[in-house]
Structure formats: structure tokens, C-alpha cells
Amino acid sequence: MAVEIRVPALGESLTTAIVARWLKRSGDYVQHDETILELETDKVSVEVTAPSAGRLENCIAVGTEVEIGGLLGEVDETAEAPTVAPVEAVKPEPVSTPAPEPVPAAAPKPEPVAAAPAKAPIPSAPRADDGRERRVPMSRLRQTIARNLKAAQNTAAILTTFNEIDMSAAKALRAEYREEFEKKHDGARLGFMSFFARAVVGALKDYPALNAQIEGDEIVYRDFVNLGIAVGTERGLVVPVLHEADQMSFAELERRIADYGKRARVGSLKLDELSSGTFSITNGGIFGSLLSTPILNTPQSGILGMHAIQDRPVVRDGQIVVRPMMYVALSYDHRIVDGREAVSFLVRVKQLVEDPRRLLLDL
Image (cartoon, rainbow, N blue to C red; front, side, top):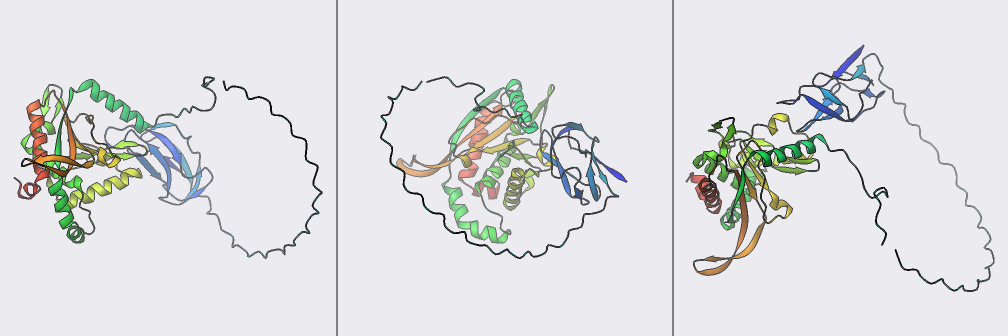
């Protein structure tokens, strides 16, 4: 009996996918629940497993666009599992060493020939068909990224404001308590992202327009924070979402961020983990970026850009001192966020990170 393999439910607002690759070929014997196929959607890759054990047949071609419920192939349950014959030891044949061949007498050296004069090189223009160009189809994820980024520029009135943060106190607190923190929380690392996540949550309470979005002629305000954390992968940028981030502790934030980053890089995030974000953070500093203007993750109204920490001379109490400094950038939708609110929000984030005790005391 042939059991059909069909496209599973893909998640929020997704109706189609592309057959990205088969992990098994037609004729292969597969086990029940064994992963046999990857589908590529606008957001993530979706693994499809075998509905039963048997021989894989009638596999649809890679690159085909399919809809939810569409037929992908079949599994013949009546096929018998292949048997593996035992491997017999093979005795090596004796190897005989051949006698060395006689060395021929040296041939007389030829008379030297004068070299022809070198010609000047010609700076010929490269041709388009000389093999130095490649054409690769854009993946569904890359198409979606391109479409969303352009939509953000065409729709929102994007403006960016900047500030800088002295990371001395956060670095000192992290150094003092990191070992104890990791022991208590089962190895959860204490990184700087959780400081900024908590600071953003605190600042959004004071400036809710940055956690809102426009829908038609209305502004939708939220009393919760679903915080997107941008992750760069080989396939492109994805933004997994920490739902109800305002209810999370430092340890839970660190665990979830680390887990999302790991699974984003191998393409195993679930669709509901990539949806319903209300504000985002992106960290170009891990790649060495000193300053940038992040683009909105529509329909969100704000995104915070973190950057590299550098020791720089600054003035403190009339004295020039060296401090670990980070530039931060806030891009926002000027249609619903005024400059005063945006600047005040970023100053609030600065205050909370520069004095982490405020995060603990909710000040």
C-alpha cells in the first residue's frame, strides 16, 4: 500500500513552499518519522518526515512550488527492508616488488636557443561568458528579506538617532558575578544582550509608542513586549522573537537568546518563534561594526542597533579617562514616534545599561 507524503501546515500566513532538497532518493528505503525532505518557506526551512516505513517513490522535483496539502511523494509500505550482508574478511594478496628498470644513458644537452623578445601584454576587457560570473536563484528567504526591507523604506518614515554608552559598570558586574551566575543557572552565560534586552523592556514602558504599530488609521499599543533578536545566518538574517520578554529574568533571556541563535544557524526554528514581534534588537558589534543605521523590521516602529565595544578617551569630572564605549542607534517610524520620544527612549536605555542596579531595582 502506498502512503502519500503531503505538505504539512506551514504556520502563520504561509500557504506555499519550495521543495528545497530531498535527503533520500526515490527507491531508498526509509523509516517511519525519518526526515526525508526540506521545504523552504518565506521564513524558515520545514522538515518533512516519512509517514511510515517503506520504499520512497514518485518524489516531486526539487525547486517545485507546492501548496499546503500538496502531494510530495509516496512511501510503499509493502516493500521489504533491505538486508545487510555480513562483510567477510579479505586476505591481502602478496605484493611482489618489481625489479628496477635500467636507467638510460643521459642524452646530449641541446644547444641553447635564443629566446624570442617578450611582447607587451594586451589589457583586454573581460567577457561576460568567460566563466567568472555565476547566476544563482535567490532563495525564498532572501526574496522575503529583500521584499520586507524595501517595503519598510517605502512605507515607514524612518529616522535614526544615536548615542553612546559607557559599558564600564556592566562589564564590572558581569565579571564579578558571571561564574556564580552560570553555576546557579545551569551554565546560562551572562552576556551583554540580556542587559540591553532588560533595558529596552524598561524603556518601552516609559515610551510605549516605540512598542506600537500602525494598522490602517489606528495605532495599536501593547502592554507586553515580544522582543525580536536579529541573528545572521548563512541563509540570511532571521529575527526570532522572545514572546513576553517583559516577564523574563536575566537567566531566561540568556537561555532563550542562546537557544534561538544556535537553532537559527541550523535552520530549525519554528514558525511561531519568528512571528508577532513588537520591537527588535540587532547587534552588528559581533561582526566588528562601529556604527550603523538599522532598518525597521516592519510593521514594528523601532529597532535598537548595538555595536562594537571600544576603549576610547572620554571626559569624566573634568579628567580625560579611557572607558569601554559602545555607540548605539535607534531607528524609528517618525509617523508615530516623535523625535523627543525617540531621543528620550535611547537616553533611558543608556541610563539603565550604564547603571545596571536600576534594572534590578526597576528604577
